[in-house]
Image (tube, rainbow, N blue to C red; front, side):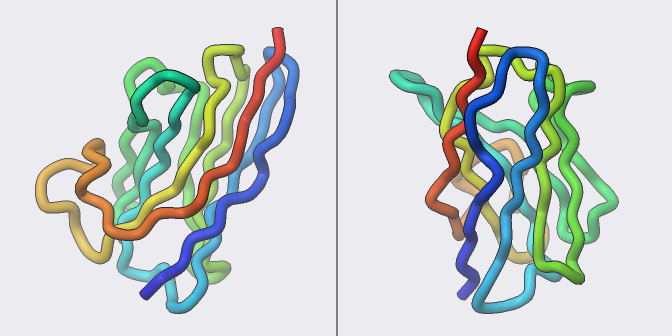
Length: 126
């Protein structure tokens, strides 16, 4: 079983950047597809980005393309989410999730993922 721990959240002004990390422990991240989701107060959790187990395919929420970048370093057992040009609307708790192998249907679906981290708060001030 893999345990996921997110870090890198915090308070940033609009226009700033943050890089979130999702570190795996308990076993290697190799062979796992990984996604980032977020949940703002009073809203449902939504898909942000995902990267395939091989790293060759990435997926993004349409409105975040060009601002957010997902990447992975399997040697460090870590997946990253680089977030640039942050907006107050990006304020949320960000979660990483992992699923061994390929997704059954879609990496955008939170129910595709078996393992979840506890989340890290991102707050963007205007």
